[in-house]
Image (tube, rainbow, N blue to C red; front, side):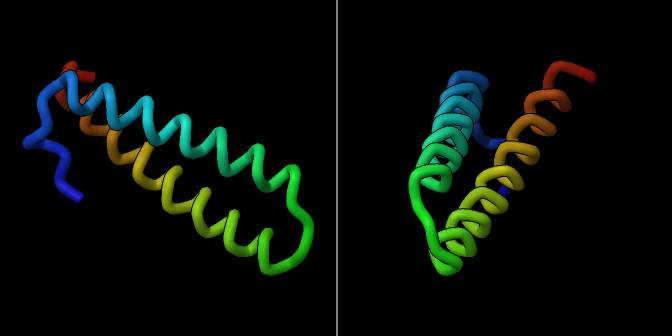
Length: 65
């Protein structure tokens, strides 16, 4: 996804939302048992982590890091 068109505020909000999603997935994974649940949670966590990495890279690019 291209995050370059987001405002700084929208980018910060999206970063906060994705971080919260990661926290919720982690909490849910700790509470659930079963191979199917683990696989689903691992997939969700991977997608959210990838998105967070991309968002943070965009934020760094904008700040000149």
